[in-house]
Length: 570
Image (cartoon, rainbow, N blue to C red; front, side, top):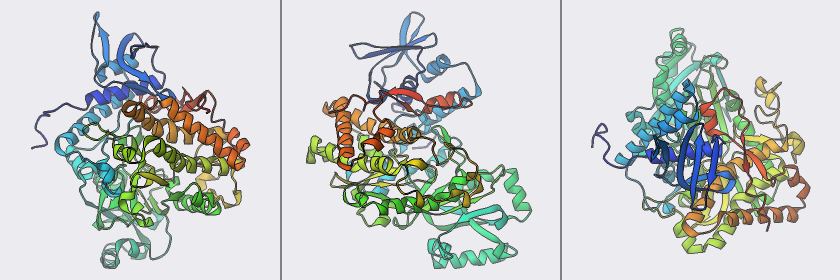
């Protein structure tokens, strides 16, 4: 079938509309809002009235029935569209135009995927690399879950994870005056490229660069490299002899769920490479903040030392990390700041576990094409009560212990965590992606002497105020990161799935989490440490993901939501 043939099946528009409305309701955009006993949610955006079948779930997450959203128009109710919602929620603006374009592109790319790429089944049996390409659903909350701005249809199939295509990185040599890098050893490139490719590379450097020792390699994502061909600064550097392009280099890669993070197609145990892409997806431009790239290895080394210093991370709350061990960025302080960067990190397959004993955490809340929960065979085998108790033990407590006992928070959302399991039985947690997403409070660190001086690595950290980078000003800021990602935008999707498919009430799910957290602090005498984070207050803040799209110039301080843990004490 040609990619240009008209769509012939139901589109993703209802899902995009549902997630748009759910996010707007969660983030407080409704002028009025009512839930009645017949499971109808009625609301208004300014003067426009809407309604849908649905309910309010844990942490204020509205759950609307797909295809049921209606708008009141000329004395009658009719099916609503995303255009209806955007026109009602705010005055026209360039930000709203961008949001509308991202919503339409999400629909389009989702439909292309549905039409041309067969959906995988029995995903609970697949290995971790296969899951990176078959967990195609994208963000369960953000309506721009497949926006991928700038992606053509061809790009989508060549570089999106869904199609599993292989491609090589593009080698660019930068003069060392443009480059900042943190390398683990002098043989890094020979190790990463292999001896034969390294020898080919050195010949190319000698031919194209004078003097060759003044230039260093930075591989770029091929999509990003193509975009840079029209960039005036990139072309200026090329004309001035400050960069040289040497074409495809190294072994082939495939995209993972995150698109810009790539896994080796030739050897899964080889490093993953996180690349900079000037592509908008969900709420963010997927470039790489250069100051975070510079400190990536130091952050990983520090976290590894903290874990090694506490035997509980081995015996009681197994937590394995995938360290980021090398990082390069070019063009600091220029118009291309953040557009030229790469980070290397260990792959899941490198840590010695069977590939099919690891699942990205977001897979737990997904359903198969027929509507059955992906984890249904696991629950059938182990029983829901026992499985859930073990999941809380294996997935919640390691992240919670790191925060409460050690004063360090991880951005523990569904793609950053990997569940280690034995035929579905939770056995441990694997975490990744720390260069931007690890935070700490100096006064709460259990071992402050281990904390690296980031200003020694990059001067931008020297006079940076708290809450700008990794150093937070208060326990509340750390709690916000951890509870937002682990609970509000991660496990809440699982609690919703268990209620819908198994009749297991969300209130009971979160009561069990709260009971286990209380027992955890009692077991280790950490009641006062936990209380400093005030995790059980009736209301907590959550990140306003859709609000950032509608009003990007307004400072985003989050929105208040009902805390599902506040009344969950058992």
